[in-house]
Image (tube, rainbow, N blue to C red; front, side):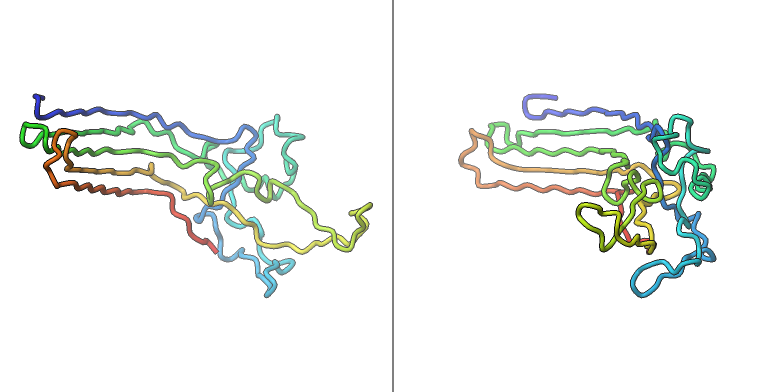
Length: 222
């Protein structure tokens, strides 16, 4: 602007594309697919009472089915109980977002015009994206897509010689809302401080404010 005031501004645009899995081997809990009438009963030890409810209640797989290339790679490819989790949602969990404009602005002002005191400030908007690997959101390598077996009282040389444990416990599922917005942060900062030539000034202060909307919440769904 002039020798005492400088201003910088800009605009960042982000193209946030959907994400998914090549073999549809991701699973999520979505509350609107939960049916209280199908809730399994849980015993005092935390195990599911056999013959009660649906252990996959509320779980959903994206898309309309496994691709042919998933055969031999996804262990439950032919399991009808797992295939029933295809409920007609899009094959990509994250919607396409094109209007992600992120303006930025900053200034620096020489208050007295002699270099003894400078005031600076800035503000900006920052978008993020919900990802497949975030803690609490991780949707891969979860039951029922992964299989595990427990055997007790086996021998080290022959672990399978013990007693198979058929007790089932509730699934530790990652969850996604049916519709969500892009996480957005708003940052503001200001500072007044002496410049290298302003050694007589005793003023030095800084402040920063950060706020956000649609951030990554984590809560128990049990």
